[in-house]
Image (cartoon, rainbow, N blue to C red; front, side):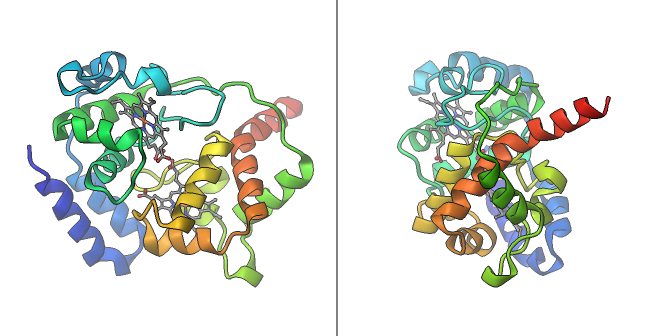
Length: 235
Ligand code: HEC
Ligand code: HEC
């Protein structure tokens, strides 16, 4: 397979951009290549030795939960479209990272689609993590649910869905994602190392202070557990 489908997709997204997120979602669903999760499981577990690609499981775990350090994002349950697009973005240079760029370049388009299909399907556990301070959580919750008019910021949940649960296929979940990873990505957009969402995410990241970033990252790491605890206490 060549990179042609991806290029066509980017063009489609630009053309239909004025119709908003629904248009992006429909275009994405129609043009993303179908991967095979069984073949993808082999890449996750073993990598692609002949291309020098290490096993994804080394850092992201076979379950897609990664580890509690927050250095590696959770992949489990993100849409196959989103995961495949991020791999293509690393390979193409719109997103750069010393570890992931060579790995993505070593994968063929079919292998990228396969491993994306695999991690979209796995149900990796949410690991137990330390609670964040309630002041940080409250500021993060405000940004996530309401936004901040004084900074021209709409709420994160407007795009990332209620509770940060994601709006597949194009918009990833943030709920339960690791705080240090979320904070790092916002700083990457601020500094121009991640350029795959200039209109939405770079614009937003540049309006967040350092304290805002720490708050919203801490909030999303914990929000899933907070919902769970609230549900448990109602039982
Ligand atoms: C040596 C550790 C390591 C290995 C092995 C590794 N990754 Fe990663 N991965 C990372 C790091 C670190 C990041 C965050 C990079 C950044 O900031 O952009 C990442 C990010 C990603 C992302 C972006 C997720 C998101 O939410 O945007 C995807 C997709 C991904 N990796 C897939 C894979 C796949 C598939 C493999 C195996 C073929 C793999 N990774 C192997 C360390 C690793
Ligand atoms: C206008 C829509 C929109 C709003 C509002 C928005 N986002 Fe996003 N966000 C996106 C899109 C689209 C992506 C996927 C970018 C890509 O294709 O890589 C994204 C991706 C992200 C990612 C990367 C996740 C990953 O797995 O790598 C983070 C972190 C993030 N957003 C945080 C936030 C936070 C925090 C807020 C609120 C302060 C916010 N976003 C508000 C559209 C939005």
